[in-house]
Image 1: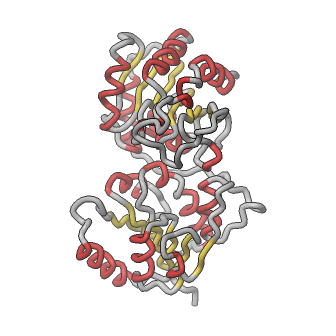
Image 2: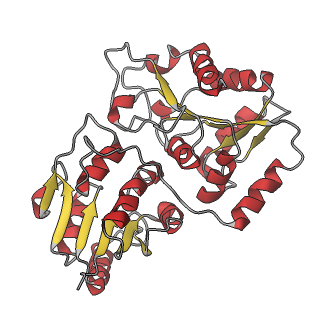
Image 3: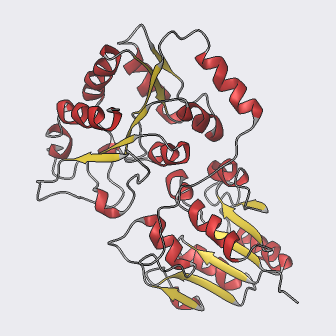
Length: 341
């Protein structure tokens, strides 16, 4: 009799990392087609995982909100033990994730060798810094990425309601070319400057694109400031769309220009040409877009770059040369390359 695998994936990172976990979940379901896959995530990524057809149930863990206490964590662990999990895979590498996996009751627990207290996993997988995050996650579940194609596009389902809302946004627009621009980031040193984005947007408008500024609620004011410079053929939708609605909008766009942040990965779900602008970070960290016609741009001839894997709230050496030397002309040239027919 085939064992019913009850698999938990722990991914309590932000949206971008969550998107890059989807290919792993998709392959897990292929490996264990009769399994039930549960995902432990934070509130902001619940919708993403709930839209995955491979996920049986999403378990929300508000680790920085109303579940941040030790008592709440052990209540969560008791809930997980009641599921009677058989396997746990944790792309997330924090001590809390390791402890949850260890106490989950699952006999098979896989995590990366650089995870805090990683010795508590029954299987430790080498975290290879030189490969893409998707490939790293696939190796966590036993996929040989040197043999198998690791460039699996992440997938989520959208609803007719999503499509209808997005169609209403496009109704009445006369242009037949559309560009999305994501100007925000959690980290200030990942943000391409607004004055540079203004030049990029001016180019797009000159090429008869209708431009959408996209992002989360936290990006709304920045996008509003940029949109005030362009009274026509541009709309700020930052903070007004859900994750799945954002993907539906991107599917209708010809190109996405984004900082090294979550929208880049939503562009892969939509499978559209995406240009990622790297400021303080670098593509070799393994978070670049790899779908067809997508690419990135980065000014790397600096001794201070990269200054950190996530970025900072201010330039550590106070020059911000990684941004100032990455001129809009360079970005525009890359846009021309990936939009050429």
